[in-house]
Length: 532
Image (tube, rainbow, N blue to C red):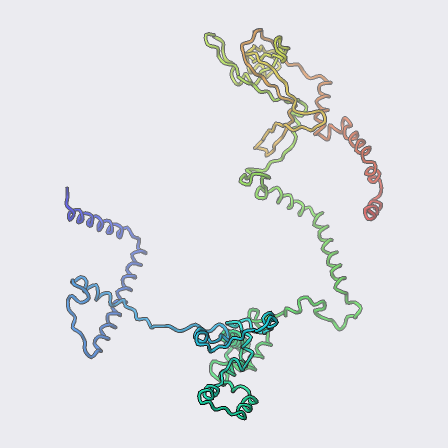
């Protein structure tokens, strides 16, 4: 096994080889970027080293550099000298933030509470204790005001009273004079805070707003005259120029052309040449606009292009959504119509429990799926031991012959128990259908299913005698019966057999008022609608 040093050398050699291979595979643009980056780093390092050398030479007592400066090895000292070029001097900044609001009353703080400099009035009876003082304070005050804040004698202490108590000298005349004079005068700074006349909001924000207004005015004047206008002081704009610039609405961004308070005015402009009586009220104007909108809607409803666009929007796949399954999306849109070609026939759902299978030990051939598709259910008879019926499945011997009108031999494949279940009641509509999808034409047709035939308990037939089946041509009565069925979905056949007239007569007998109204004129119908 190789030692750690050899393995380390081998891994480093492989790593260098990979780096060289990666550098050779770079494009010309990448190599150019690397070269410019290296030149820029080298140029910045040289500038920093020159600046550092100039600062060291300007010092009065320069220190001698040694090989191990900044570390205990040559590599550490070299790294320290190289790192000196990347040092950046940052100025210390510790400016406090500007106050958010103006001056407010905050009280004496914790020291005032501990030293008892703040007098608290304690009510002596229930009337004073339950009385609520109505203090109209500003919402931005720091602490709530106590009732004693309104008592000037309790808030401020008299410095002369302590001296009188110590000396024991009291003069009644001086005391009466002091009582008449009232409390001592406030300090000017305290009086300025109590009777504050400045702004109660953010003064810095107000100054910023003024500077912005001056900048907008300067930009507006420059846009009007094409050059900056001279002012009395550098960097400032005269108030007259600001007012003049505000009146000139030449910028869509800086000022509004239409004032907001004129948007809902009824009479925006007046023509002196027009008569006063021609002006309409706001209600008449709204009524006229409503009539115009209603006229446009009627025109759009009768417009063929708008109707076609409405159908296109409704038929688009993007607007279709499943009523219960949100994740299901439509694949394609197809027309859903009754199948007129097969409407004259009666469809039945045949359920085959077990198809015929080969019996072990016999040489009988099992019928194929193609033969079962052309099979017949025949020999239906009542079972002897059961309440149901039994039937045989007849399959054709030749598939091509059964598709033509030639006589075809059918053999008995298997015997089943037969049960018939109706799928439609007498007075209820169809609820079971078979769908035929034609992807080439984009049409889906449907046909109702009348009943379901259940074939179960498949077994070898007891009567193996086959049958020869021949297809005969349709007679006139058969064709008429089929056309009468197709007339349910075909308008031409319905007119041919008079089924449409019978439906209209039945509808008029059920709704005589609607039949009477259909024969009247359009004016009568309009009057009836209006009266209703």
